[in-house]
Length: 128
Image (tube, rainbow, N blue to C red):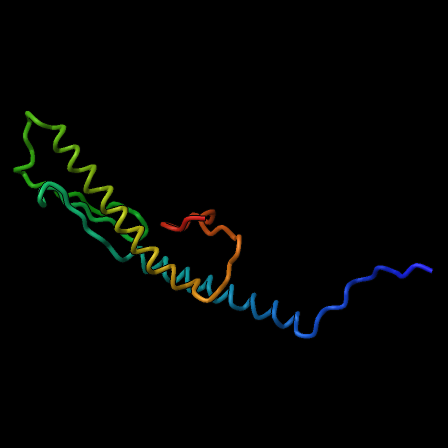
């Protein structure tokens, strides 16, 4: 007579481990939401051309301001001004992503997320 293949008996404590892991994931999610909210209020600044162009970007990657020193405005060399703006914006975005990684990285400490691929959640600066 063949043995029936019913549900596998669970190891003692397996259900508790799953519940404990779900609690940790919920805690991590709350910490990440709080960190993202705080990031929207934090800013980083970058400059180019020896400070002739300054850009401020928030932690949620919103360009908040671009300040151009009037001395940087040379009608004969608009390309140089455009290059300085581009450099300053890219540097400010890089710095904001680093800020986000610093803040959000702590929210997942101690939790093995395996292949969850956080980069797919659209969080600034997190790569899968």
